[in-house]
Length: 212
Image 1 (cartoon, helix red, strand yellow):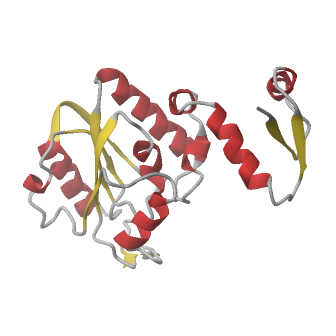
Image 2 (cartoon, rainbow, N blue to C red):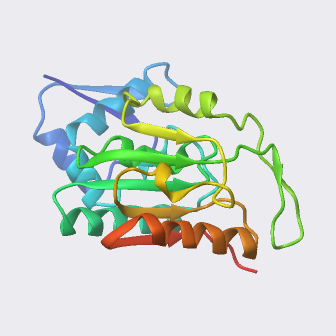
């Protein structure tokens, strides 16, 4: 085999160790057309477990989201904690937009089923008094983007909101919920109550919030 290296910046000690331990090396110049392929090669060297346990933010890189780097580390840490509590888990996300925060669960063999609830507005209210736009906010668009990462058969999508949905639409107990729907007090309370109805006894949830 050979190792492909992106030479954008001085190599770190860890990268140098990889070089010395490897077979012939190809150095790719910055802006090379092979740059993206090389990044993919690096990622395949580590298993999903290793990437998750190291809180590797590249697990989120295929689809953009509105989360910060600290948010993403927290989400990965929560995912690690849930995986340690049970041999497998089901994941519910309320407010998925383009699927950015679904990526690590889609890649996770321990995640049996992903439920995505989203009423798919192009614009929605926010408690901060601003109406935020969500262009290309469709289930089809989300699944198209996610399919470039992995097969999407385990994703069950529900176009709607928890104000009108019956919790029985979730026919499996959920071990992890993530609430990132409409950012108003009323909607968030309804989302939380919905999650309480579908969580199993050892399950948990998280919210995506921003400073007020």
